[in-house]
Length: 455
Ligand SMILES: C[S@@+](CC[C@H](N)C(=O)[O-])C[C@H]1O[C@@H](n2cnc3c(N)ncnc32)[C@H](O)[C@@H]1O
Image (cartoon, rainbow, N blue to C red; front, side, top):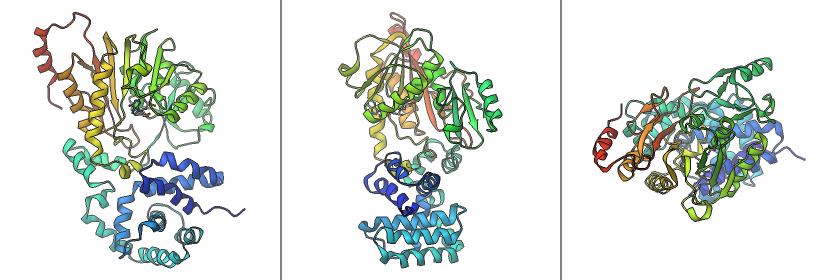
């Protein structure tokens, strides 16, 4: 059988993203299955890289193609962007990159496009300096992010936005979470060293290890036995913030694929955990992860806001609300976010998050703790949401206390993505007063204490 053209496989993975607003994590696995194992790394690299630099590549394409491709020829357009990506950002020899990309047109039964692709890519080789200089005129092209997002980021983080954008364009590090119930971090670091895998303890997450170079999980000692999982450092902070204790009843409100649920149970195996997620296929991944890690929880596939579907009426000691969000803190891991997210999505997400906060608050015991988390870097989904929630409920903001990570906004801790460090994330730790704990008279003072300004 003829070897599949990897550029064409990349086009097929990218088309649903750019045409139907599907996520790359949904469309890529089908294509990965169809190519030989040794080509899967390249296919992944081509898809991630092209989406990471899309607005830059489009800025160059606009100079090369005077008449835009018809919408039915989006595949050819993507081949051109893939070709440019290879020439600019990879070490694939230029002749191989151009030949393979141009011959992709034949595989797509659009032989007429070979001349156009060849001409554009060769012109880019000749005029790279001039064509690239033109990109300086537009922030979106220069910084490879959509304009609306850059504007919002500048507004929310006037001093930090530029570093966050740089971090978003870099390859993320591979971070592991050591299973506390099976090994200590020091022991596991030693095991990695024995296997010749260079690794370091994370700065903030006590079970976290950063690998110097990403590796296939099958090379990780004890992976199949659940000794270790892959999870970003920021996501690993949730378990500590929940202040877990034996036998507590815990709700993980938006649980899939279950990274944080698993971490809680690894830390405190006696917990009784109810894990809910509205997406059946994502909930299946919780089951798979739990099987490997030998953990169990009560799983429900339901919209969390439909309490009658999944709640038995017993209050929870702890709630993790890892809310659906813009995912603007994890752009470097999911560069399709740059393309998929729209400015208009954000207020609707903030509203959904606020309604989840208010509804789930009812299911928390007096004295209980809720951790609100998002992988967003936008204030409206994070600090502003918590600020509003505090005025609408009896919640007290109790943390993160003296956090050595992120920035204190006055309404929770905001982490921005760090090169070779954690993702962008947000955490607020909220406590419900004990019954009869907080009188009406105390409220004004409580509210004024909460409205301190961000640092
Ligand atoms: C940020 S992800 C959760 C990640 C997870 N906590 C972890 O650490 O692995 C948000 C999840 O919310 C789920 N979700 C979105 N809307 C929901 C809803 N209305 N009810 C329940 N789950 C929902 C999504 O399917 C998604 O899995």
